[in-house]
Image 1 (tube, rainbow, N blue to C red):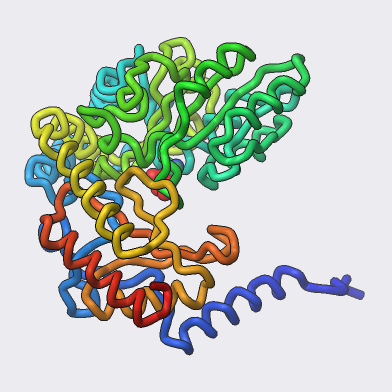
Image 2: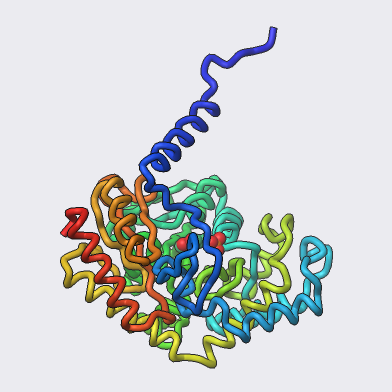
Length: 402
Ligand SMILES: Cc1ncc(COP(=O)(O)O)c(C=O)c1O
């Protein structure tokens, strides 16, 4: 007789999720995977036939659709075609990949850099390649899921410290075993809250306890620092991070991820990380787009100033209306709503006013801290920022948040 499981937990999980999606759909507040049919300039999108002001984009410098970047991608297709033949180690590494890596290293002020096919994969493979069973990895509680997954995959002892709390990290380091390596990993800008990592103190602690330091710059590249070079430039402490991670899917309008650092570490990753050895590289058009985007950032420095100015303007407006925006100082602006239900209703009201913004609910954030996560870019005009904050205020009054 065939074995019949007492409880088919896979089926149960599928059914539970489908029921949740269906219930939200029934209430008319399912906002995910919305069909964006067109991009009009950097800050407008066409959704279900309506032109909406875009406040959910990670294209922080407004580079999506930049003519120079589009042209570079098309030229790369003409030159290399659309694929990569296979993995770079065995099928040949396209020169465009090396050019991109050299550009990233120069931009980030490191000896070398390596690219992978996504930011998620970059964190997963880097953490799990650098540390293993006898090591310890220390992770901020609000780090991105891809870092957490890399830590779990690595098999290293996994220690989570309180969010942005350097005293707590120091206590953990003090009491951790001195056998094996220590790696501390954190986001530079936290993706749900928009606050900035306390890097100077973190660097001191890592040096004191001989820990390697890895920082994810997904939301700080192009956003922090006078020239958009990220968190080291913001704090004026160049060369303080050992492993600089970033994505090519946000400020850089492409796809992929990178690690920048010392050349021996990059050589090690190129010959040891499974995502490099066993998976294809990013397509040549995307590599060329990313390369050109770094050049545009250098040629158009006003973009970095614009995103910083726009973010400060928006934060000031929504705070003065009475919203709680936590400790954000960056282009990610959480507008707290409370319950998931309130966040859904708030989204509905804001979207009725033609502002494209999405809710973040549990389990992505703790229960009771559901929010709308607005993102501000260099492409927004001051009137668009004012219109968005007015829409938030009207919606907040209607839903009872203000
Ligand atoms: C902090 C952080 N790290 C890594 C990633 C993953 O990057 P990608 O979307 O390029 O795979 C994200 C994506 O949202 C992120 O926010």
